[in-house]
Amino acid sequence: EPEVTQTPSHQVTQMGQEVILRCVPISNHLYFYWYRQILGQKVEFLVSFYNNEISEKSEIFDDQFSVERPDGSNFTLKIRSTKLEDSAMYFCASGLAAYNEQFFGPGTRLTVL
Amino acid sequence: GENVEQHPSTLSVQEGDSAVIKCTYSDSASNYFPWYKQELGKRPQLIIDIRSNVGEKKDQRIAVTLNKTAKHFSLHITETQPEDSAVYFCAAIRDDKIIFGKGTRLHILP
Image 1 (spheres, helix red, strand yellow):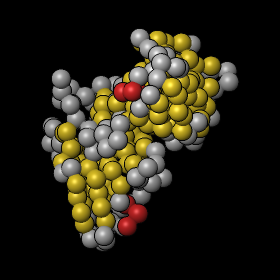
Image 2: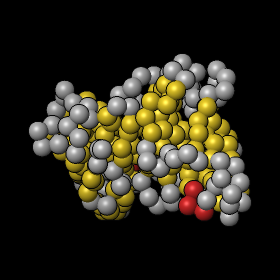
Image 3: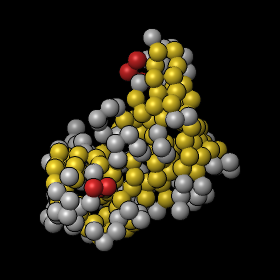
């Protein structure tokens, strides 16, 4: 059964550095999402992406964040200048259609020192 | 924007008993309500979902009910088993944005 994959599984970075988190959504899916989950807390929506543009974003998704689908398979989240409070698990998800099941990747644990 | 409240935050039930988790949402335009199960260190996985034109849906031991008028929806797990122990999140979707509740940690007691 196809799954969403994410790399790396764990990323450690220094405050102020840029990070790029990578995701490979399920191949025939058209809708792509990023979420974050701070340890022990709920999953928070960051951004949704469809037809090569952002369709929705949350207030968390400020100018420090950007997303890109650089080719037909990858979907990336970039954080330009990481802060301590960016430390969290970041989940990518994809879906066939809006208002439909979203399949989550295994997550990337980002630790900002 | 949408706000999803979930109760209780922690729930302990004896194995074999039923568990009920309740959520409310604020935006009447939300029209899709999934429930996710998350085991420790793992990804959220969809266990059941319901759309706003349906009042109830059942899948084996799991059922979800939706009251659109009251903006309530609930997850019911019957005949609970040890493997049901996890964190459960309700969610509401509007405009392709999924808003999660804060989660319920379910403990199944032997």
